[in-house]
Length: 183
Image (cartoon, rainbow, N blue to C red):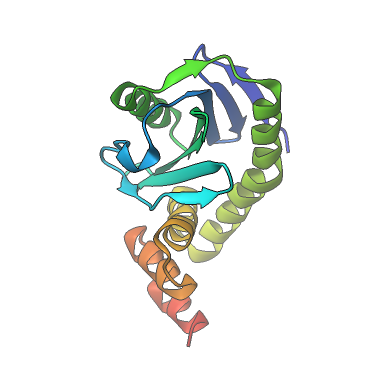
């Protein structure tokens, strides 16, 4: 599980094989209900103590952005994708359109993000590669379907079965095999 870490001047970039996570720390004065996530399917704002968070999913590439905002306007953006250039463009566009002011990341933010990538995302990526081979689809299709179904459950409140079937259809996974899992 060799997760490489680099910095491109704006974000800390975590890389595992083809998987990329792009993490930016800063401040966001705008409430999450008012942010623009152009070209993204947008989830509902979630609240957890003093922090609010929202996610958006872009199916075409596919990529996901999660924005966290604390009550004191401290904020972060973490994007995940398999196509780094599209991810970088999406994060930069979010920053420009919403007045997000980036700041040098604090070590706890980098550590927490690295830990999540190492423990969760590398396993997810490997599982999607395995599932893609089993279903005879590309790893991109399997990864996109897995991330999109999770997005639909977590941020749109869909039932697991519905979210999986919608995501499978959207990313071209064989529906027959998946439908049998739920019958």
